[in-house]
Length: 147
Image (cartoon, rainbow, N blue to C red):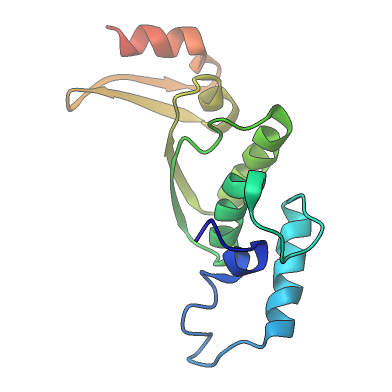
């Protein structure tokens, strides 16, 4: 789906089967996609543009638009520039503030300090450490991962 246009991606989750079995009109889809793209700071000239460098934001945006209650994210900021990274942090914080549960893993250790109140370090099926608040630093994470 990521190879499709921004409009199709932003509306894909909420339009599956239509709401209450009814199909949504294209005009309403465009209005909702425009609002989501603006709110989530997706960079585009037209909603008919390919997703391109907006992949992570568009994928997250379509699930936020569906008002999901649980998010399972795997490397949500991998390979993106610092501006886009902070926009994704803002989206994740907003989802959590709205009451959603957010579980994620990341290969970028600094993500944990920006996004987590609590981190559980697991290795070989066993809990190795639990870090909270100011203890969530890359150095402490590495230490917990290697003990």
